[in-house]
Image (cartoon, rainbow, N blue to C red; front, side, top):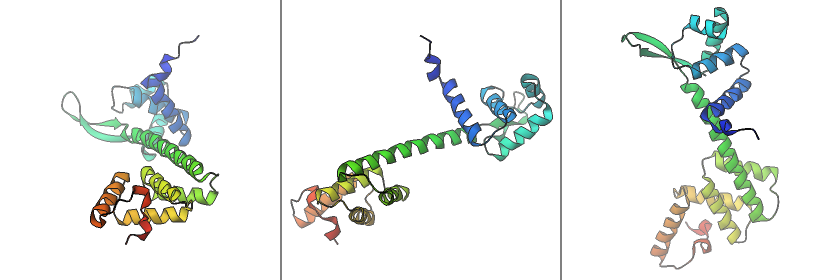
Length: 211
């Protein structure tokens, strides 16, 4: 049985992300090799001669690839000091790492959206329509948290309503009250109970009637 432990190492993981970046940006082989070189090298100075000798690439090809990577905002030049305290320019891969991080965050958000869609289908007992998919997605794009959307869904279902229009009104009311999560909702309800001296439960209260 082959040893696959190396697959979980940082080097393999980062390299796989670099390949995805290369494919997305249609990088040439020289550009990809240059990006790999910058990521792997401890020396972040842009030494064209050293790169040419190591990668066996013509200097003009290295310069063209380097400029294209700058244009794509995958690398950038930053001012620094060498060992003799002289000013020099070094390669920063911060833009590349931001690109990789944003991609992972987007994938995470997409996974959360799928969870929300699954939960909606389970609660309303049927598949959601394309239009309903867009409405739910719009709530998330507007900044409503997954927790708050699901809370509004449960509120609607408890009241015997599975209409997304009803859920939208609940979210609108919660937004007007400044609620960011279900703790805010519970706190608001507690204040309402105190003011009205009521003993209603969380989902017994019709938010749309509270003005």
